[in-house]
Image 1 (tube, rainbow over the protein chains, first blue to last red):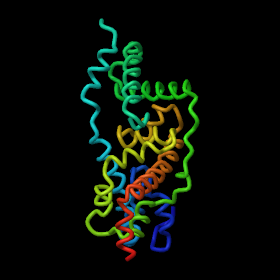
Image 2 (cartoon, helix red, strand yellow):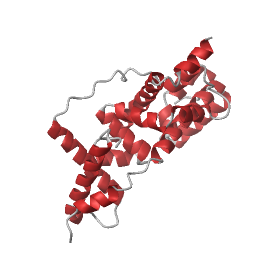
Image 3 (cartoon, each protein chain N blue to C red):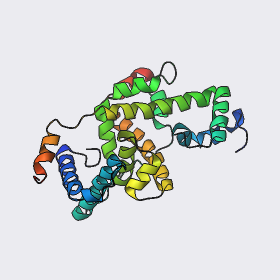
Image 4 (cartoon, rainbow over the protein chains, first blue to last red):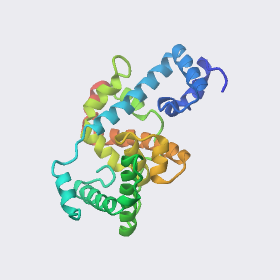
Length: 80
Length: 172
């Protein structure tokens, strides 16, 4: 991966998901971070996408299982 | 419930998986990840159930979703895309129920990966292990499921009039 600058937002964008999931090498992570420091447009898009991901995770994880689910499961299991 | 799309089926699935896990408990290696072991049984159970039912695959118009869908649509509809966390504001407006409904609209193979990622916080490797597929498959399905989820969420919000009024106001 070549050094990123304003002209290769596309190259940064192709790594959006991997960057957000921290699946790039440390060198690639650093290059993307450097690009984001100089590109307000990409920063806005990356921040928005990161916030969508985190928001969806947070909201879905707040959902609780039905209160009687454990009782129903236990009632189905054979008694020792 | 993100797998089955409805609560009764979800409860049946959990009960069946718990029963199978109980019967197969001898195969669980002490000291390994119980959650991952149980999730594997749960997803196998779900696939098995689906095979038995021989359900028709879910067709979807979500496949052609462009990247950054919510960003683009919310900008077009007049929602802020900059300032203090505009995405969080948008998600709060759309609400958890619509996110759940959007997850339910994903085609099965994407819904499963998305569920394990968003709800169970599994890594790519853990998802690959659970589903017995390559990490690259998880990566590509996850990428597509994120896009499809955003489109489905926006469509539901439009149908519910959540974003339509805002868009009309912005156009006026």
